[in-house]
Length: 344
Image 1 (cartoon, helix red, strand yellow):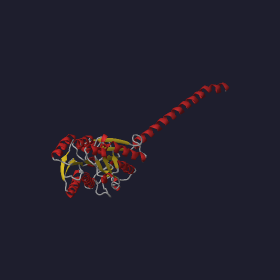
Image 2 (tube, one colour):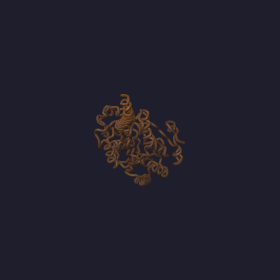
Image 3 (cartoon, helix red, strand yellow):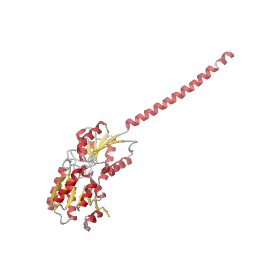
Image 4 (cartoon, one colour):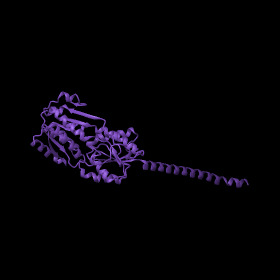
């Protein structure tokens, strides 16, 4: 009996050891499967945003950083808690449709757009994926929303009031150049924002008794010919309308305006930061920052149709005295006192 009992020890010890190994193996397997499930859940739940812009990455650096800052303040960190797929047409509007299609194929939770042409391109491709526009001159006139209060479709976001601001820019230019008669207008006729902005600036020019000389810039190669035409037409000053083509060529436009000694007012502050004379308008950086709020609400389940389009609350007037000196222009004191920022 004793011998028989002792003979069982090796078997019992082996069984115990085997049980320990089996238990350890089971624990490892359980932990591995658990980690895999967590990783899979995190991957599937990570929101994905498509970002479509008609300009170049360099031209939109400040706005992109402001948008990401807005997301971070709301708890989203790019690459960790949210994914962003960027697409830029580099000022070539013809590419936007293809880029918008690329983004839709990625099945993002929503698409953020950086201007009227990119918003139109995205809206033409999808009627179901929410679209947040960071800026649009007149989304109602452009057919993107039914009304500012009730967008009705899959598009919402922020408006820039660009048509009204174009007339204001022309009036400021008249103050700076009292002898102003002829104004070269650089624009892009293929931009969705062109028609309403042109209508407003035509109205303002008539009231100010100014002659407008439109130069259609459809590509970067059109800029030098546009300046030659402005010089030939004896233009006294230059005004640019909002266009991804023009914004993508900021440095060239500023340089040629100085070379041709043309006082100029621009649609975006980046021109003045690059050496241009004046900017008056909406802070697109501020609008990009505010767009993050729309993204947050939509990711939390709010429908775009239920989010009213917001109008700008922050306007800027920036003057570059160094640029004025380069073209031999003295800025009137009453204009300088209204400037939010003066670059010396």
